[in-house]
Every structure is written in structure tokens, then in C-alpha cells.
Amino acid sequence: AECSSWLQGMGSLFTSMEMSEYVPIALAAAVVVGGVMWFSNRSQAPKPLPKPPLPKPEKRDYTLDELRQCNGKDENTPILLAVKGNIYDVTRNPHFYGPEGGYGVFGGQECARALAKMSTSPADLGDDLSDLTQEELSTLNDWIANFDGKYEVIGKIKK
Image (cartoon, rainbow, N blue to C red; front, side):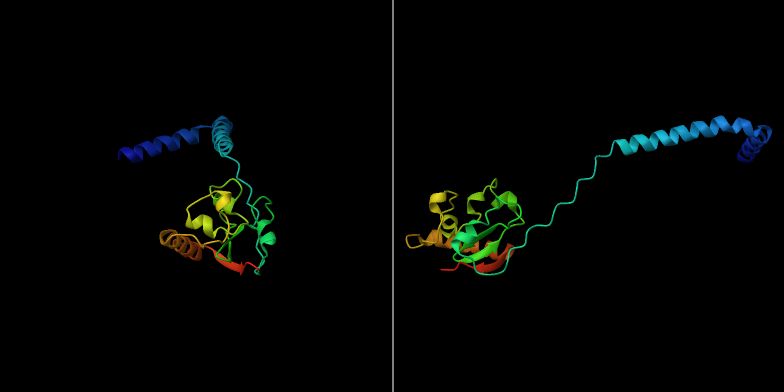
């Protein structure tokens, strides 16, 4: 009963108002809605531009000189590294293997020896494993398993 009397009261209010009396209410509503929309759009950060596609390496065998060119310093060139002669495409992780990455020294290099020794020293790069301990060789095998699980082998080092 209370609800229906309220509705009847509202109905009589609107029927007693002339159309010109609705104009200020409609303008106020438009201003409020427009302001809310403007402020909500203004607070949104601009959408970032899509990242360009990663460069795709050619699947083939590479010389050491060709491999050295794939070190991440040129963003149009893939990032490759070699372990025991197998060349891995690590382009998708430039934050690791690019010039500024923690393993950036490995980009464009044969790094089996350095991986076995758990070293990021440029002096330890290369494929000479002749003086490594069994523990270091085991560490290298763990690295190879890790790379095989994450990255594609795209070729071998040409001798």
C-alpha cells in the first residue's frame, strides 16, 4: 500500500510538471554522465604499442663468425648460442641472453665450457672441455637438458 501510494504521488508530480520543467533535470543528468565518462577515460593509461615480431633465425649450420653476429646487439637479428656444437635460438629471452642480460656474454658464442664452470667470464667461453671435472661435466649436461627443454636447436657449428 505504501509503495503504490508513493508511485501515485510520483505520477501526479510528473503529470503536473510541464515539459519545460524536465529540461534542467535532463541537462544535469547529461552533465553528470558526461563528466563520469570523461574522467574514467582520462584516468586510463594509454595502451602500449604491440611489440614487433621477434626475428626468426635461419635453420642451418653456422660458422663461429656467423654465430657471433647473432648476439642481440642488433634487434633485427636473432639471439643464438651454441652448446657442444648445437645452436639454440634464445631470441625470446633477451633479458637473459641479450647484451644487458645476466647471461648476455653467451649471446653469439659457443658457451659449453662457461656453462660447465658456471661462469659468465668471457675467458671461459669456448668448447674445450678436456680439463673439466666430472662434476663440471654433469653441470654441463644439466644445462643441455635445460636448453633442450626450452629452446629449439636450429643448427650446428660448422668446423
